[in-house]
Length: 259
Image (cartoon, rainbow, N blue to C red; front, top):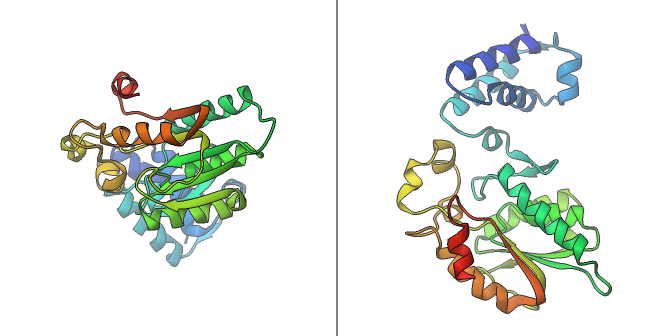
């Protein structure tokens, strides 16, 4: 048998030789997941012996990673804003860029303190629930609505909400954009599909092959979702409310024109 530390180094080497930019991180996550070890246990006992069953599990994950499957898909979870979220083939893999959207809404909540009632936030196209669940975890006095057309995505969001202890403050609505929302919100937030249909196949394989097309395809010019969201959001917002949108590269001015 071989020690876990040596095995991790070998995984890192193989991934690096294949051109994986995050080889060290990916190797650690793969080994931790396959062997059911914490990061602390991995560091504390690098000589821990790995049996053939463990080595086979690691090898299977390496093969998947070399086929461009993201590690988050392999291990079934993604860290986002310091918390772990379940991800499945039914939802977009949360990206670090989206954390800036979280920071913006937190700033709004601090600038607009509530004197009565809870701040109500609608997450349009919630997917894994990473945005709204994080916001409710960060804002103790807020409540939320997770909206998605996909029942499977809403189930993932529900699991994440329960895991992070915010389910009681979160409503789940299966709807096309905000058509099924009742009542008004103080903030509407969304990271909608924004990729032009034609270039999707040219995206990195980790995205094009493993993220759901429903969460990527923004139509011919990438703006289809925004054309639905903008008028519906203004109808659903309280007077003086906020609409916070993530946009694709080069789209910000065009979305502002829509608004």
